[in-house]
Amino acid sequence: MIPYGRQSINDDDIKAVIETLKSDFITQGPKVEEFEEALSSLTGAKYAICCSSGTAALYLAVRALSIGPGSTGLTTPLTFAASANCIELAGGKAAFVDIEDETLNISVEAVEEYCNQFGPPDVVIPVDFAGIPSDLERLYELKERFGFYVVEDAAHAIGSSYTTRNGQKVQCGACVHTDMAIFSFHPVKNITCAEGGAVLTNDPKMAHRIRCLREHGIERTGGWRYDFPEISFNFRLSDIHAALGISQLKRLESFKRKRRELFERYREELSDLEKEGRLILPKIPEGTDPCMHLFLIKIGENAKVDRDTLYTRLRAQGVLTQVHYWPVHLFSYYKGRGYGPFHVAEKVAKSCLSLPLYPGLTDSDFLKVVTLIKQMV
Image (cartoon, rainbow, N blue to C red; front, side):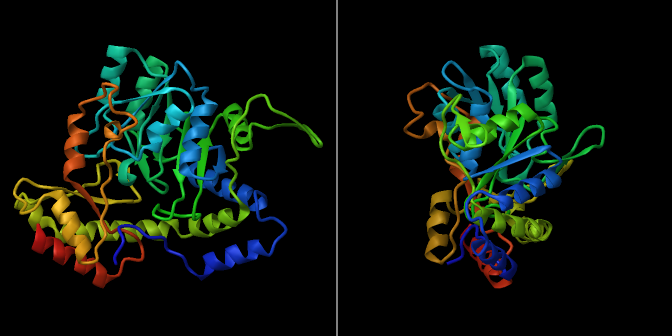
């Protein structure tokens, strides 16, 4: 079977984990701090706080912003549900606006319309879909105007960057135009810790609160003494996971090059299908330098099959694809609240399919995928 995403583990990764297993610390310890420093160095954010998953990172971020009962958080419907669930889990109410058709990122215009119609939310969570940075500079201008917080969901986008209108290159996660950002280190992401996440910020008070919330809400007061000003869960990352993350981070640029090469090869191989109206292929927007997490095709009007048929037929031939995503507002938990319709997100969800894209994808497997698609679509 050819999966749509897969971790890339080498001997250095294995060695790093084994060395940590033999050390004095296997739970949260010096390796976690080292990983946090490396993430800060990569992004330029002053503080990085590692935790147990990307979902935990989202929850910690909204908790640090005091999102709770009476709060509203705005995000995109075309994302993994954690982008919205974190708001609900903190006691707030999730809301959604539609996406841009080309980038599949949250529509800044739709955010502005929401603010004008309903009043500003407490927080906006844009998602860097497939590694393409959201339009954070324009969103920051709305933040300044309306007064909401911004948490960049960069789960897909470690290693991605964008260029501002004045020519400044900004790494995703740098928090130049946001209050916080999060990463995910799940095995299908650009680098992995097996499981893990991180919150990044430039605000020392937020960083301190996130560190406390990561560990039950504990506030250390000296020696053995501690207090609970508020309560939380255990979201710590272990040194074992951090050791793998540190090793993986050293290869991020090579992963990025390989992902971009595969992205461009897919575009070249499938370009005729796009010209014939059978597929719509993703593009890299001007002013962005993404670490491509997904290669997401959309079924065109002239295709011989619909998305579900293509998914099933590819699977029968050993090619595992994925749908990114079924819109969050259509899941049972969110139904009946009057959300939507979100025409762009819902149209994309019915036609999209993510093809295998990961550094270890072999030439033979790549050619099998494109050959089958040319035959089937």
